[in-house]
Image 1: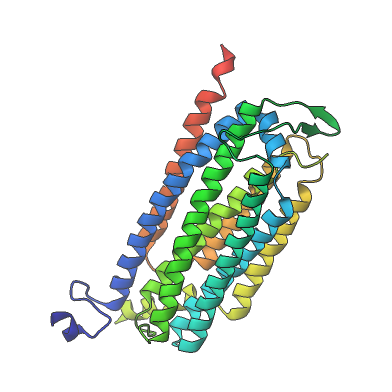
Image 2: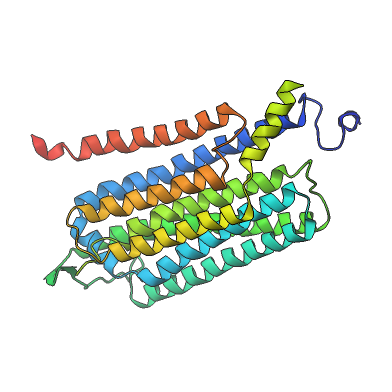
Amino acid sequence: MEPEAHGPELVHQFSDVQQQKNAASLGMWLFLVTEIMFFGGMFCAYLIYRLTYFNAFAAGSQQLNIWLGATNTAVLIVSSVTVVLAVKAAEVGKRKLLVGYLVVTVLLGLTFLVIKGFEYKEKFEKHHVPGATFNFTEKFDDNGKQIPVNSKEAELFFSLYFVMTGMHALHMIIGCGLFGTLAVLAWKGHYTPGYFTPIENGGLYWHLVDIIWIYLFPLLYLISRHS
Amino acid sequence: MSEHEEHKEHEEHASHSLGFYILIGIILLVLTVTTAGVAFVNLGPFNPVVALLIATIKATLVVLFFMHVKGASEKLTGAVVVSGFFFLSILLTLSLADYLTRAWR
């Protein structure tokens, strides 16, 4: 009962709407910092092994499909634009436009996952998935020089590739579910110019997942491509 | 009431026009094409440097303009964002300071 005394969008422990918004945004950013640390650990492992086994990492990277990777980067960037436009639509209370942007975002997220799926399929076919069937005979093409690499070291590259892109893909799946839910709630009219915090915070999550991919793309796909 | 006006001003700062967001999106796409293209040019040891520099420019654009850190009404949010990257840099620098100097003995 009590929150209603302050209007539907303001909960009673906050003195005004702006303070409530700031608190929600701060909490979301704290969560995002934990996400940065989570992925940071994997990036750290990647850096150390890349420096230690550079030739194997370069040979592994040369086996990835750079065009699918670049396309996926573009897909995520466009989805980040639709997310920011969704937040803007929510801010001015254009309900149908908001739902439209949210749906397009989910579709772009699914496009990313489908392309990723095709990449994974290729890895399975080439036996580049770490495990009992792993087989890596490709050489590191260093400006025409064919340098043989240790298959165990290449397996380490693909382990990191699958863990990092896999954790990223899991975040994308969660993001698609989140934005699908937001789209349904937005359609039902849950969000008004006075209250659209879930859209804003969902957007922050989506952008962070985009940023992680912005780093994954050059680190995984672009090692020693000039040859 | 002056406090209220201040908040309003910040809110206007946080949200940009449709054209602005599309412009940032186009810059990000151009940088993506650039980073993929530059990877095929032999820059010696500078290939990863350029790739990471472009990635950082892209990430900064997203954080500042899409995540609305630039123009955020709460300085505390900015401090949390910076602290996140600060702790990440501690993780990376100290780990690499160990691994990169092991061969020095």
